[in-house]
Length: 70
Image (cartoon, rainbow, N blue to C red; front, side, top):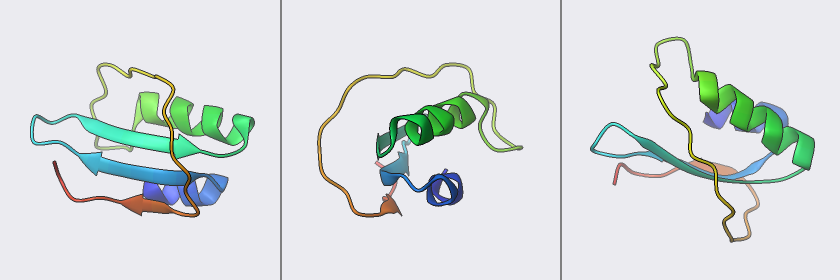
């Protein structure tokens, strides 16, 4: 997701969770955010995405970072 976020020019963060889920906060141009959400619904080639829950969040970010597993 980090590489895709960088490619799209969005900021925020992503982290894996111990239960196998992934959490992310994304900020940027509406079209770029929508494109990253669409990508996340498919995931990278080795992923098995079964659900994607989207909600509004808050924060101010200047880059996209990978955070430690929670």
